[in-house]
Image (cartoon, rainbow, N blue to C red; front, side):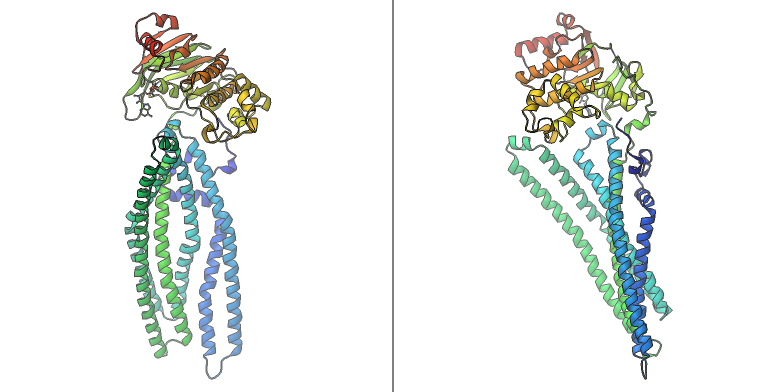
Length: 602
Ligand SMILES: Nc1ncnc2c1ncn2[C@@H]1O[C@H](COP(=O)(O)OP(=O)(O)OP(=O)(O)O)[C@@H](O)[C@H]1O
């Protein structure tokens, strides 16, 4: 397998991931623990800043009382309060800035850790997992998870924590004026926060509808962009734009409703704040009138009361927002942290010798897709090392499924597939990938250079070896004609190359891998006869001395093979040499005759 990532890059090991699928809080806790001291420092700085902020009201109270003292104010007290005020706002500013500085590195770092872990875990899923899901949506989910945690950390540091601390410290300070007043404020604060939170969460349906529609539209857009050639070919550009326009209008409508709901809550809270602050002012002025409160008390209570009530609003809205981010994180983890399909088998531990023979044996194999009919049932096939076997059969007879099972992209429900006598499920990744090379109809190329694409999976290969493989695969002519030769970037999925050129790059890759087993999946079926000739020549060179398992609809490509296996509904219905099957009534001869007369694919 690829190299294990450096342990520094792993916060949550793959084995622990599925256990966190329904536990977003525990998932986040791993990343907080990884940077515990930095998180504690941010927490400490925010607490210090809040303490400073609240104590300014306390200092102002004393300043006002000292200034209003009769017959003459004590200027020592007045100036010491001024100095204290300046000191406190200086510390307050410094604490915020230290917290901001730390957080700007810390929260971004956490986002990076999450992306690395989720990407690594995602790449461990089986090919079937990817085949059944939209790849764009999966990669978008990794960003969604990292962004949700980033938002939650920011929300906690800059809103939840300050508002909570502000409320607690302000109430403690109000206790010094009137315990009853402080208790009343506690009641009002808790009541208002609970009310806003409950009303806020009642709007969750609206937020969810919007989030679901937005995700669906993103997927839809990606689908259209990926299929632009089809859209153009069928003259559907205008219609697709109109369709997308309608979907986006629907999404913006849902977004507006979700935001307006929050806005209505804010209006409701503003009214509540006005009433409660007015009530507090009347109360403290009455106390002052009864000589039970000083002017400083009036100033402090009014300021703190207003601060507290505003903080309840911030706290409640931040909680509602936090619920939204946690929902997004939960949804993402649920989708991404499914247990790897391979994990139900014992960990692969056996390896093949440096040069495996390439004897393939499929024994009593049973397989069906989830919820589908059996594709293979008690299927047996033995392929000698260095023999060339063609798999033939009507569409849907199970040929591609067999190749997927052979490459460990899918897993048998019963039976075994053995390579040189070892069950492929027991083979470690290096042996598994090292013993097999694949050339398929749809060649997978990355948006990297020609050289990197040929060298893919053989990192140690020198430039000379890459060039030799390219030469053996008949690629040199077109590579040398490219602007940057081997360094030319092939474009997304190799769009800058023709179908035949892409095939020959795949063949060069297989040459470099030099695996004893070669799997050909309709390798030449999509090519015109000129390209097919080039590719076929390269393939003939590649096949020499290897076990070849080739699926082909065009029977002419299997001329010269040692053996043909004809499949029908997941069973072998004919098995023999080309000449035997040509002279035997049955599916092979029927197809051959049809192709001879039409020269087309059945
Ligand atoms: N991902 C999938 N999920 C569910 N069923 C599938 C899936 N892939 C294939 N099948 C079903 O499995 C059966 C065998 O399909 P398979 O692709 O192996 O046939 P094939 O012989 O390779 O066909 P073709 O020559 O058209 O490629 C078919 O009935 C097909 O509908």
